[in-house]
Length: 163
Image (cartoon, rainbow, N blue to C red; front, side, top):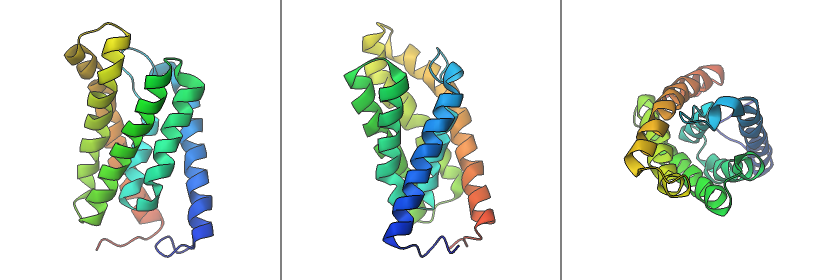
């Protein structure tokens, strides 16, 4: 399949599959995705917007849905998670649009969720912001690096050329 020239139907189908993969990965890894050091491997999937910018909104929706089903911290965690997903995937899409190295996707995947989610988690859990941000950053660095390798693998598998 030519992944660079997809019809609207193919993009919609691909988006649905990506949302499903995100939620399944979150479900399977929830034992360590919601702890003190949140290693959310699913957030590595945000990096796919680097290659497929149409995934920005579906990835934000995927985070919103996973927080709704598995999060348990209420409205701010659900809506905030959706916004963080949009910002992170959008940043990855911009990096791809401006043809930056794939290695740069590690930065938004690590920083935006760690610093953004800490805004409401620190208040909800009555923990100092920088303690919470540092704790989340530990896990998000792992997800950021996984995102780099995911983009590199997808580029190789689908033979998407660097421009």
